Image (cartoon, rainbow, N blue to C red):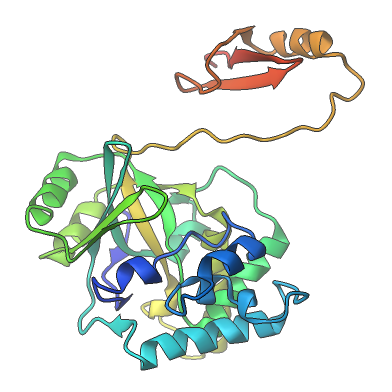
Length: 307
């Protein structure tokens, strides 16, 4: 039984949203964040990459970085750039890129279900990156970015999403990278609560460190609260949950800097002992269980055995 919850959110106006919106904290460097936020005090990079407002030599994990993030967030609230919703809500968030769309449900999830494995992970996490996200959440008293989850589709949830996106979105813009962003507030958040309660699991698509940090931040608050009940908002993790049938995860690359003494042909031969290897012209995998490898000036397609 998956538990999701409506939540109080901080939202920019439709007019301000394109200037407030920014890349996730972990896909750009401090230098890129400083460059992209230059001349734009509205950019949310001042919260998720707050070291840009400190001297260049500042360690991104220095305690003052989190204090500045909190200060910048409070300033955005005081100025009215971000306004708190009057009621707890659930939202639909649509991404559009190269003619393809995916619609996610934005809600909060139960940190306890991450502990028990109902929110399933597929990566190990680094303690230093967990520390970073935990510190950011606890000092800011906010989840600045959602975790990216997916779930096995149901007709019920699909029909609800379709019904709640018939009207024009409250926020709708296309960012400089060509990705379209649109947001709707759902009419009946508890209908989603009931529908998700019939799911067996959620799966982390991206954001393992944010999820782990959210769980740790919840534990910090729980341990500090002698009257803890489990119903407090600090027990929850902000997430956007996409149906698996709509989900598109783009290919990405990892660079291995040497072959540990092997020649390219020896490496390919060794790889062939683990699965099927053949030359490939397209570096993008064409099916699940497939990766593409560039070695010795040649692309290869590697297919894992079915088991």
